[in-house]
Image 1 (cartoon, one colour):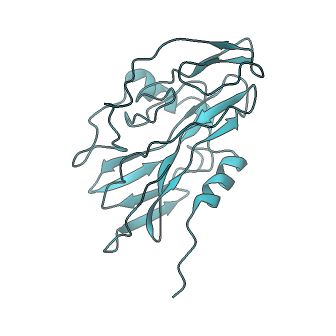
Image 2 (tube, one colour):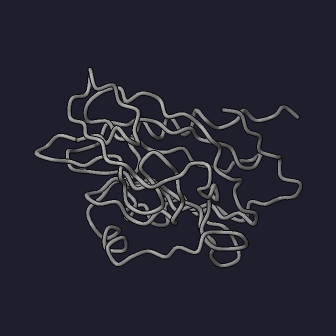
Length: 213
């Protein structure tokens, strides 16, 4: 996978509110507001699932002192059986693009209508489901070794990768116009948790090194 992110030509970072909704998002609610939208989603290959109980957490654009940078997707062990990952997303509000952090919960909530691929086509998750404490993987959209992971099935998902939108944000100029459904809104109010320690480490490792003055 190859892609480039241009360094912002002017100060774009408006504000950072740390811990504003800390309890609401389980400790990961740092809101970042930026005046320019993130780049299109890059194309990349999903790595092999490491084993049973791991769920795919798609890659996303994060923002730092040098502008937007890509945080690769990863397979993460679900914090508890039955929980699914709702990806974070950038959304236009109040004159800026705000980052809404992802979270773990019983149902997949709203993630801006962004088509992250590999089961996350903009709403819900078609990459698998929980049954009797075990996760069953849809090999039509996830990279799973059936010799290692035995709870699998194959169900086609209508998703033409050559024509799907690569837009990575909701609202604003050129953004997606998808709005949350009633079910997605309810998911926010269910018991859930933010990123795991491993996910936070993964995010931190993706930050570009600061340039020397």
